[in-house]
Amino acid sequence: MSGKLIYLMGPSGSGKDSLLQAAAERLQASGCRIARRVITRSAESVGEDALGVSGEAFARLREEGAFALSWHANGLDYGIPKQIDDWLASGRDVLVNGSRGYLPVARQRYPYLLPVLLDVQPAVLRERLIARGRENHAQIEARLARNAAFDEADDGCVRIDNSGALEDAVNRLIGLIMDARACV
Image 1 (cartoon, helix red, strand yellow):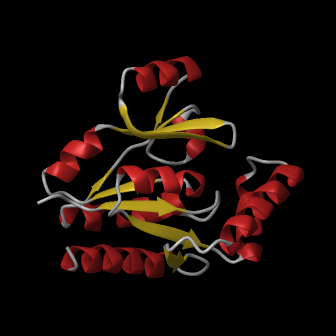
Image 2: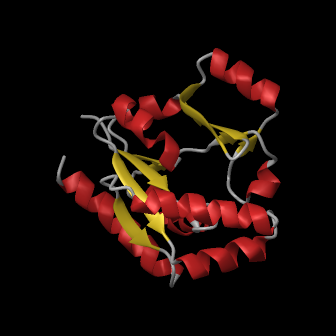
């Protein structure tokens, strides 16, 4: 029996990292593993439980086959460790923090993945991006425009609204994963 890959996506500032942190204990208790991303940015500046590496180290890891999935977005490289294949093969569900732009490739590699899109109302998203202070005004507007373009696409994703209480989004995510298990 193989596990299910849950592919969580959402615009920068949608609260993916907050959702993962808030849901981690319940997910792990249910047997779901959360993959730790490798990213070419300091983990401290990311705000997530990621392994920050240099661009050279990332390229070397990719060449060595260390990643099950890897992509480039917003000037950064991201990788999901190959270890997820072992977890999936052993029957464990695995949740990854993915990229909407990379979803078609991820679907080719894992045809039965559960794509989950974390939605946030545009005004809330703008406020969050401004509050975190990582980007200037032009960069924030570019992110919002990119998000609007993705929102127009019918990508077959299950959507979770994270504009309100974080616990509501956590409960919805846990429910989706439990429902996905029942369908296997």
